[in-house]
Amino acid sequence: MQAPLFAGVCRVPLATRMNGVHERAVQLEKDAFMVMRCFTALLLSLGAGVTMAQAYPAKPINLIVPFAIGGPVDTLARGLSNSMALQLKETLTIENVAGAGGTVAANRVAKANPDGYTLMVHHIGMATAPSMYRKLSYNPLTDFEFIGEIADVPMTLMAKLALPPDNLTQLIAYIKSSNAKLNLGHAGIGAASHLCGLLFQSRVGVEVNSTVFNGTAPALAALMSGQIDLLCDQTTNTTRPIRSGRVKVYGATTQGRIAAIDMVPTFAEQGVKGFEVVVWNGLYAPKGTPKPVIDNLVKTLQWTLRDPIFRDRLANLGAEPVSKERATPEGLAKKLKAEIEKWRPVIQKAGVQVD
Ligand code: ASP
Image (tube, rainbow, N blue to C red; front, side, top):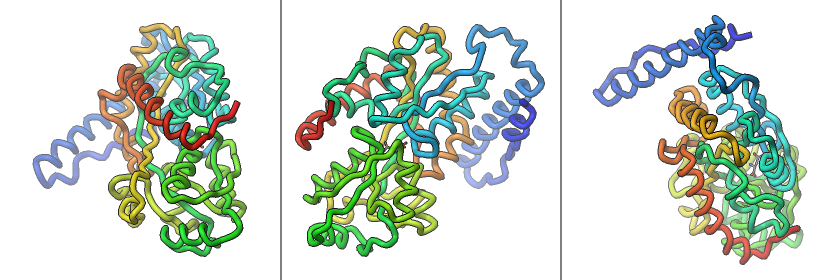
């Protein structure tokens, strides 16, 4: 079972492009990392990993994803779990627990056994939920152990191909002049796609209807088959359909253009200011998970964020791993607190609250 794993990671590209001193240093660092990665996989494939007595992990870890399979959080979690598995010498199985903008999963993890075998990847929705849900049955700040932030993922606003407007200006005029309201898909109250839709409506002064999905993978499928009109989603889901022309795209929610899809203009450069959303993501465990386990996971997360395979995969999808400082329990706690404060007034102003 381990041999394919070894075969899959041991294509070590030794330095071939050595133009400048900097490029050489970067390439050598990448090569050294790949050799380490390869060596780890080799040990694993020979069964040596099993003989290295380790208290944790002693069995597969359940990694909970709060949205449907194939969407942005799922994609990030699967990339992360592949790299973490190499380092931990144990499998991480993904469980998609979708519903209510990610709060079903967070509630489940908050109440799970804190033994290190239940973890969760969650995004900005951890910070929007306390303002969106009046009866939230967990506290994002006190019911979890923080392992660290993972990656920043920007968003793009897209439409089905049949929608007439070809650019943002036309889209705004079309929504303002058309009698029928357009239908925007999102992944539930408090999800990034919901937040992005709210910001779009408030920044350009329009209103749209919404359709809720279990995640933005099914929302994207509905967009491409013409069942919904609009979707704002992370680039980890939208880069491929944008590149292959299967959707229309109106803008990126970033300050500067996104390298992976640099033909897409930002909202700011099209005259819509203050419409910036970067979806940050974190790794969590239930409160009370033993400190040595958390320390091990922090070390593993940091290793993963330096893994060239994980990094290249993210870069290709317009996402960026966070710095070492942010990939820590303190970094994630700080981010979550700041983001809860940041979004509270925006959500209150939008008047979106559910039980
Ligand atoms: N991109 C989704 C969101 O709107 C979640 C997902 O399906 O990963 O938050």
